[in-house]
Image (cartoon, rainbow, N blue to C red; front, side, top):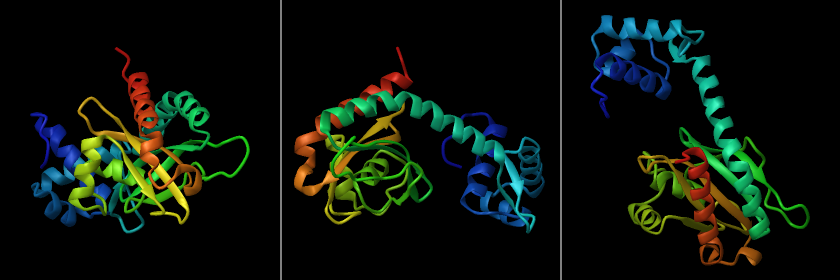
Length: 228
């Protein structure tokens, strides 16, 4: 069942939620996937549906409900509010495009960005969904998250060791980037801060140039989220 809080009904409810988040389930599928007794799975799913944490698709299968979307949007708003002043300072320091991403399933989503006021930009529109298989932000979210994405063990180990990642022409030709994780209290990445721009400005070793600033920005966002 993964992590256990010691509160049985809570752990089972989370198991039902995470199972349905992976794929829509009818009762038989939910029972098989969770290993819960049929009556227990049904009771929990119906209870979660009452609070709109689950809902039904046109085929009657349980899927994530609108309450989860509202909670996720609220979390985005809190993180965006904490991040934007830091991203603005980072953009001013580097002169390059700055973004912050969160992992959603097998994609990363840009939920805030600050672009240079003039000149050549590396625009990633807010709301862009990018793969977790390439790019420095994907490396960081994979290395400090629960899913390794499409990266090998050596890449993830290096990223964890140095606390940041870089990429050169991985996701988009001619673009380089460097990213660092915004960590929660347990050391898990809740987001990734990135600086990106043309290789001719960022160089083929963007981490040498901007890693310290990006790591510092990620730390600033963490402190704004978790003031002492």
